[in-house]
Figure (cartoon, helix red, strand yellow):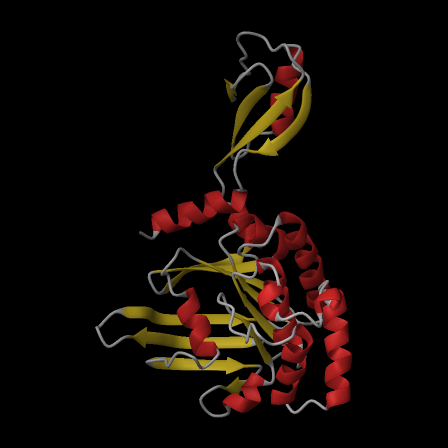
Length: 305
């Protein structure tokens, strides 16, 4: 099957000699929900800029659904929807008009454009704002409008560059549900985000880019298997014993209600619970000390520093 996105030997060198991309190879399969992660300045936005033709590459090849963007960018663009970090619509236009006009750029008949506009406004919770000028929207609603605009021509590949920046938790969760829905219906999604728990919750595979190079490209499940240690925070029923010790486990008492348990790779968390139960500790709830993918992300960057 033709990949949704294929990148080979992609390079970008600026006039001052700075090499933003250093020979990137990347392939994203159709139907994938893929995370492209990396620290600020790693090359994520440059890569997206090249795919969308906003940045001129120095070398390499980019194909969208088998269409080389150098040979036929208009053809590739039909398959492509881009949601950039920055808002780039006319804030003095009405929400509905922004979507209808975007559909017109792709030659979509007005009747169909209005039907699709109604659909995406409804699905993204913007129906009541259809006649409001875009400048009156909250930051989160502007993000939703950007997604609706990117989808109005029904692309097969959607690229989201920090789509939930500045979006509150409730709106972020509903956005997750919508993205899962369109992905399940066949839309390939590439996500860049600094919220690593977001990537873990949504994506199956990921690549990490650092200093213009892909330093890892694998499934999130495989990457998490490389974790050598995890820390769990346990909320307990007080009062806790003054001293808490469990054989083979590092247990730290934080306060009268909370303890931290560090689990090495290969250890069984249930054994730690058994040891705590023997000391009369009743656990009410448990959570990760930090996001697991964040720990792996930091480890990968440190190894490839």
